[in-house]
Length: 121
Image 1 (tube, helix red, strand yellow):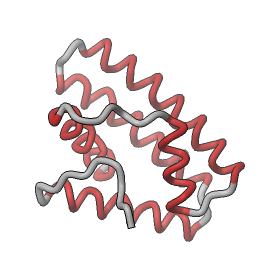
Image 2 (cartoon, rainbow, N blue to C red; image 1 turned 135 degrees about the horizontal axis):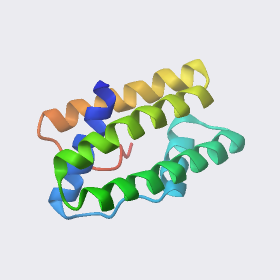
Image 3 (cartoon, rainbow, N blue to C red; image 1 turned 90 degrees about the horizontal axis):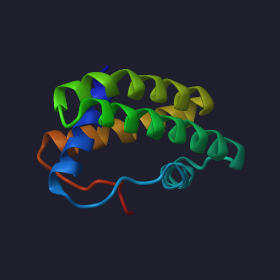
Image 4 (cartoon, rainbow, N blue to C red; image 1 turned 90 degrees about the vertical axis):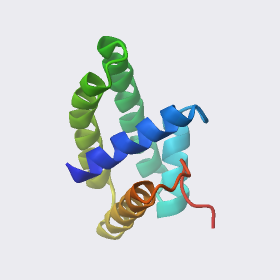
């Protein structure tokens, strides 16, 4: 639940800043492949999960017609399900690293930090 709120916050900040467009499902999966050292099979599965998520979220955005509370309410269960599906594909070590990435990003957002797409090291 906490992770979902975090992801909604990131989305809201990115949209409010009017900056970058959302990353495609392929870009999201490719980023995780690099950061978590995913196999090609895992990356393919994540791309499918992110594609389904994007479709559902677009439907919620359309149905909400700009109502942020309605969007948040509609997107929270989608994000929760997506996170569970992602973690089911990852190994225990990858899942722990993924959770740390989410926690770190949430902390940056709560401290007023920006950065929308992950750490360049």
